Amino acid sequence: MSHDLDSSQAHIALPVQAPLEKKPETLIERLVSQHGATWVDESSIEAWSREGGDRVVLFAGDPVQFPEGQDVVVVLPELRRASGRHFEIAVVPREKEQDLARRYGSQRWPSLLFLRDGQYVATLSGMHDWDVYVDEVKRVLALPTSRLPGIGIPLVSANANANSNFDSCH
Image (cartoon, rainbow, N blue to C red; front, top):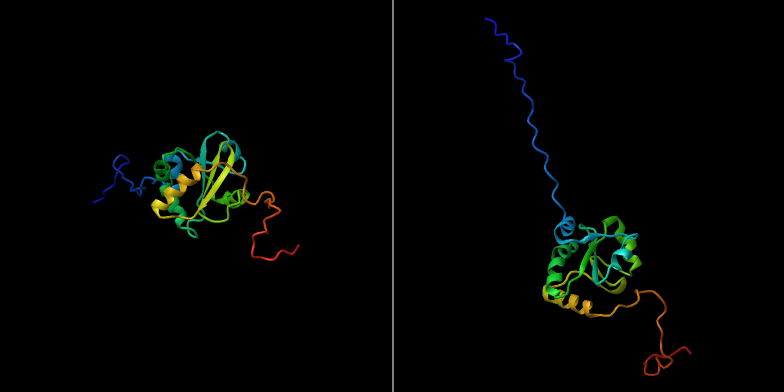
């Protein structure tokens, strides 16, 4: 007995494709999407920093080489809350960090670059115990603006060596 099926009865089994899963956000992407951080690079950081007020730029570093950078990403919004002083947050794309960090005199990862009204304030490097970190952020936010590290020649008083235990060559 033949069991011929007409086209209305034929079923073709197609593989079921699972719905495409959205790639989970990285911690830095979450800092941008949930905490209002801004992406900046060498062409946008100056304009962003001149928008006024206190501003903090995160240099997280390579997450494999500097895993503590991911810890800083997570605690940065909490540091903002705990400091009692609002500041805007920016992050630098990984591939732009080296050049931009060098421009601001930063040589360690992770680092937080503090700017105010377009001017340099200070850089705070590394991950710290919570109480120390909050105190350091408060201290840095209270500092006046200053020149970038490594820019210019420091002035030394003519009497600088008068009280020194070192022999002067002049």
